Length: 363
Image (tube, rainbow, N blue to C red; front, top):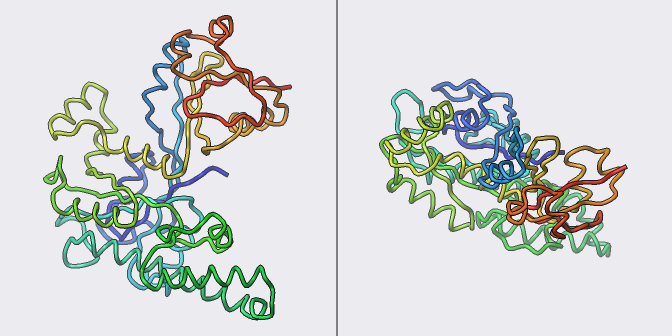
């Protein structure tokens, strides 16, 4: 199943505007809470400067970027863990995604209602995170009750699990997300079946107003401080402007960005950060006049990479011919690189490197 990033936040934080700007899905946007009820699903292209260079060297007429799968999830309010608002749906949909993009409202607008009287991004973050923590506490408590007798009766595996659950419960009680607890790999493995919400990696997305560009001001700095405190990253941009930018031609885009003092579209950084969050790398193929970027989980093997293209390629995998993208630029094709002895032949267990250009042989 493809990895997904869920966009969450309070109602009217700009979640759906961000989602539309990235995916061009045209999901409904309104100035009132809960205009998003069912989740919206879409795919966003991941910008990669290497792709065009590889395509040009290989003389490919078609270029296909890697994609990022996004889910726009209904807004949350206080009491969501008890089912308030759309809380039950909100929390269930978060459990299904692999990483979280937390949209935080930093802009003021008389046309877009706010769930509270004033724009306070730190308070908004606290509301959302508190609900996720409370939901996790309930999940941990239920699991403790379920395994309590077995843990007390001498079942070593359950006793070890109980030890981890108590440690996590203590951290959650002190308002620390699971992802910030510094758990070991073994401890995380114990928790896998609980699908804890605060265990998911997160990036904070500060949604600015036009008047806050390009620097963001004190509200952006406040979001950054919260993110840094838990070891997370922040991406900042004006979602409304980004939606307009996505509709412009390249030359118009440069002029538009310059007018606001912006070096590059914020959504490019967002897509890149989300890939980092998911632990994705990129490999390239240049067959049949098409240069394509493919996302792959870091540490993925050659046969897994082949399976990204087609299951038949993984099933009948024979070998992979591999060359780094920079070396590929020097030769311009697999045949030229092969003649120069620059292509490596790798087996199914080869660990793919970011930027590999690959040609798969299969039966």
